[in-house]
Length: 297
Ligand SMILES: [Zn+2]
Image (cartoon, rainbow, N blue to C red; front, side, top):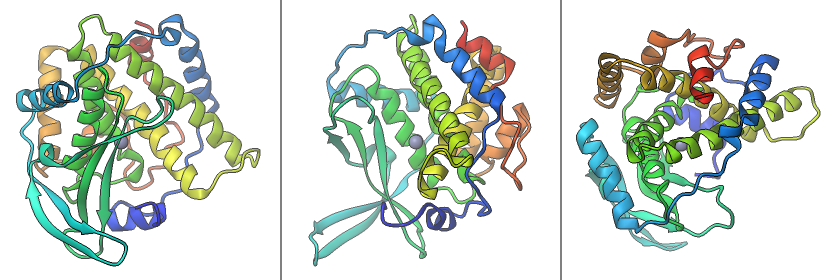
């Protein structure tokens, strides 16, 4: 998928197309920097290593208890050589997609959904899910993140804007992290990671806009996607985290409707924050007071 540009991916996935690199406000950069400096977000929480089977089954059990998943298009390669490719198209449970451990230096890689995009139906098919070969208590949430991509990306129109294509995956990653560990070490590890991501990428996008930093347009669009999706996912997660049982159930049921193809990510976001679907270059994107309270807990 690396060989096709982000704009081409946006077109093939059917997102609204008039997207530009996002320009963050100074307020967002300051707020993220302030949160990132707090002791709770600088602490390195200890997480244990795990067996891959246990990590994957924790995710599957979570989905079984919280959501009803649908089958997704799987492109199963029987032969994948340079000049000879033979594959079968199948519809499988997202949990049947092959999991491919990836050995990387450092801990900056968590997972990825290998996707093939075509102009013909089905225009999105999945080949497998990559996860960091170092399996820890964080792996289940990263796997849940990719399973969510498979669920939402295979439903036409579930996401309107490329900017919002990480929102549900980040939300569900946090939803599972909260459940896995009552002391919240896992959740806080994800929080630190994401607040660092928001702060760093927002600063870079500002510098890119001011011609003080070189970046390809594709990288600027990818960074924009993470900043916008992370902020919106946390604004939504703060509603969930501090919400009554009824609010939590409501958000869950709305996410189920998105998986089922009866509702969109933008409609859900609009219930909790102001999202302009047609001109999604929202210059007022900011962390909601509830999200700031969440990061300060
Ligand atoms: Zn993702």
